[in-house]
Length: 97
Length: 478
Image (cartoon, one colour):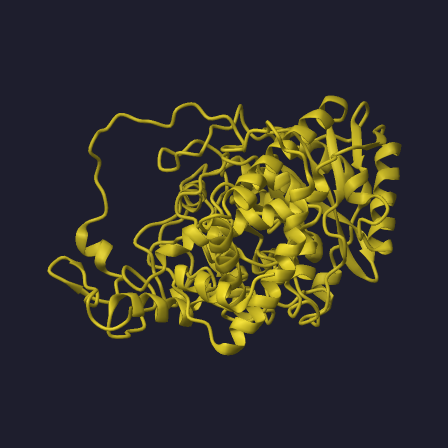
């Protein structure tokens, strides 16, 4: 069971703000989904390694050679705010937490 | 040929017409463009203004047959929003590798198709731009998350389309719309430029009218890409399926997915069994097989996929692209942007994933789920020692009514019961049309070992010819 406090804690971690209504729904829905998921707790998985990759791949490393990349102005073109060739963000000190 | 004749051709037929000089690529493009602009299923979010300025080079294998592409593939200068408000109006500065590869092979971009937001859903009702309607019955869902791609191909407003499959998002909508959908082996198609949902599961694949079209499109999709470190080369080439018989082919029907209590609707089961009988008539043997951990696949999937999503979707923070909602400070801006930009299902999965990855829960959820995944892969390996393919109905039900499952996320997740195990194991699986139940299409799913796409396509082709599915229901409903 995921209670209201846990929902609010996880929402803070995920940088989500939930309305009173959403908190109630989320608590109910997550509890139900996790109740279903918890069935995997019944399996004996002692000594079973976790899957890290489903298809065997050889080393994906390549030689470290410089290649062309997106020009700065193109990379910035979709940003909501830019300044001095970078992404402009609000001050971490102002407002909020 | 009239425009309506043109849009009735399969892609393979259209390539042949163009190569004979009977149809011009621009004529075919305009016929589909008109159909895409005219369609009333909400399958498209964007349609190209016209055929590409340059016609395909002589000998381009796809000859200019246009391609509909799921919204979450980045396409340079063209809206690529993953059907989310948080990316509304986003026009990326580059094109996904697979889209670029297909364009180079002669399949220009026709339009971007609607989907569940960030590919999270099984009904296409989670799109920020409204649901897609099923062309067989407009009161029903087309399936998801590649619902727009499936509906467009079924209704004839696209010759073929790209989708992505994380837990069934190509196969299930293909089944519900009466077309072919193939999820390739994980890694065989580059994920570069696909807006990520769950990186260890996401895989692009074709949605097509028939098996031959699926083989042709896949042939030009596969291949190692230096920009995707998880991509692998496809051994050999994807061939043209020609099999007429299934002599010696052993089909395994997993008791855990199809047997008593598995929740497959009677009509869907009847259509599935009829196809098994056809397979036997073609020379195949059919026996029950075991996938002991398959009943736990859905649980493992709904830990792994949301966990990876919660991490992937951390990038949507109002800094580099998409929506920004100001709130004085930095953290407030992140929070307001994400809360305003994401829809309910995306928030639910981010919450679920963040919870299962949070301090103290990792081993109990994500760690355990990845161990279950190992067991599921081992189950399939064991099954493939005795069987060529594992076969199931693609979806436990036919297309359901719009709104009928939106209030119950868990009931919605159960749609993926038969498709998720293959995703967790990274193996290829196809869904082909399998006759009707209650007047609506059902899908027949065949899964094989990693890199067995050619054998799957060949067997699916033989079955397809024997089934002789009548596609006209998707067009006459208009």
